Length: 146
Image 1 (cartoon, rainbow, N blue to C red):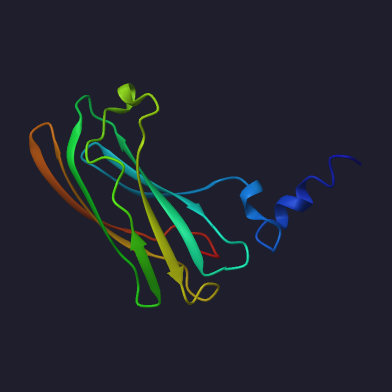
Image 2: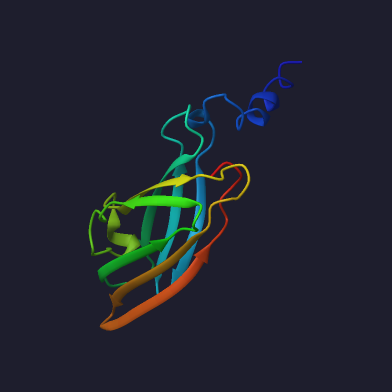
């Protein structure tokens, strides 16, 4: 009967049980021109369900560094956000990154959490192998509670 209690706590994770112990929530953002962006999602304050901290992680799938990284994010009217600058505007190739992950933190407040899920409009610009790239995407894969 020991294996039975294990599934129950994971089912209760979205409840007031502290979520940081649960598996990381990672939402794919976009993938274009050798650059991939995903969002690591966290709830910084257990008592405040409206606030989320999203950490954009940039991955370079080309053989050359990506330069001039610039991410713009827009949220719906029912949300507000505060963006920090990226840790670098140059993204090394993944094969050579060796722990030098490029990230950017975005704090989001969803005033309609539980009613409307978070959705982001993304616009990214960068230079890859001498070519200037601009790409827009919608990121709507956030789970309930974000």
